[in-house]
Image 1 (tube, helix red, strand yellow):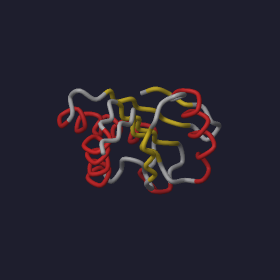
Image 2 (cartoon, helix red, strand yellow; image 1 turned 45 degrees about the horizontal axis):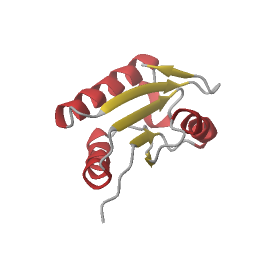
Image 3 (cartoon, helix red, strand yellow; image 1 turned 30 degrees about the vertical axis):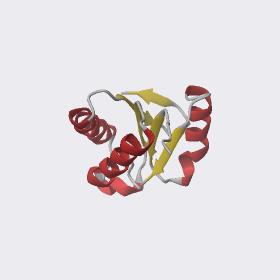
Image 4 (tube, one colour; image 1 turned 90 degrees about the vertical axis):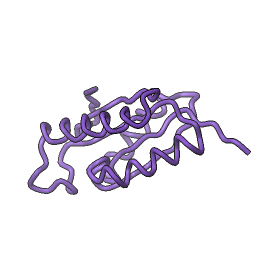
Length: 119
């Protein structure tokens, strides 16, 4: 039986951001279905994330990927900076689009205040 899902959301597992992520999903993906993936560092381990996106695309026929990084990410350690997150988000977007040019890929940086910035 085929399952259809609208999107995949990839975010960090950090407990500090979960309420903000859920609130954002409720507002921005209202009425849509989504696969939710939480890894330390979100897309930092890009090969692992690509496997999940591929599964979501192949099994659930998604048409959107939402990638969310956040401020003060422990998985990045000393490399944690806004610029590094933007770089990694764009790297992930480029790799996703190279494999799935039909996917809409949205990038966000989440501040610990709860503010989302579209990249």
